[in-house]
Image 1 (tube, rainbow, N blue to C red):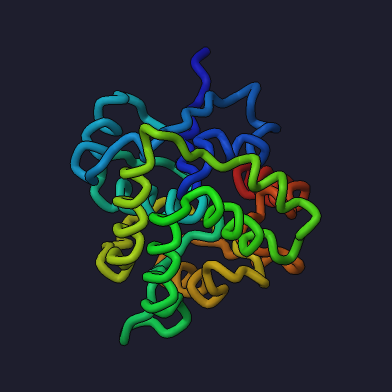
Image 2 (cartoon, rainbow, N blue to C red):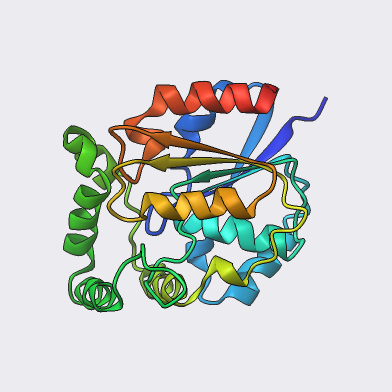
Amino acid sequence: MDKSIILSLAGWAQKPSSLDPAFSSLSSSHKIIHFDYSQFSNVEDCFLALKNLNIKPQIIAGWSLGGQIAMRIIAQKIFNPEFLILFAAPFQFVKSPRIGAAMPETSFDIFRENFVKNSLATLEKFSLLMMLKDAKRAKELADNLDLNDSNYNNLIFWLDELKHFSCYDLDFTNFPKTLIFQGEGDMVVNVLQAKIFAEKIADSQLKILANCGHCPHISNLNQVQQTLDQFLSS
């Protein structure tokens, strides 16, 4: 019997397989496909490549920017999964009149400028910010960075995409059953953004994790696995 498919989309500049630990208990019944969107320099080619996978994922999971991309491909009906799992996904990353609980545009522009000047050092500092509530494991996250000569320019493209895209532009009608993980102390994506998702997605469950930053699947792995197993079996 063929295994069900989990389509996994990692966070910006992270290894495509970074969500593996969260789904380790499902490895016997599911095949995990890690899609590396950082190999693409535009959304159209990325989404076409997803279509060309010729798969029917039961579960789509996305962390941070990967979660936002997951929602875009569902809204565009590229896939029709039974379940959507979001890990610290931004509803809108940069502050605007529509959303105040987001990163100021000036802060984003400084981060982008620093990344262009010294990408590795900037990402290492970003790892510390993501693991602020679990500093002991910040090195583990830093080891998970995926920066190389082939994807550097593409990472800048996806960073700009993160700045300009808003989930206010998505149609959440007929979204699948959704589980939203959000760290209470996330310094990258404000916890209020997860609450907007919970309001917009009719069949959704929000799990706010105490003592957790931007990486629930790393800092709160056991709790994530237990919640995930219960959610998928309910």
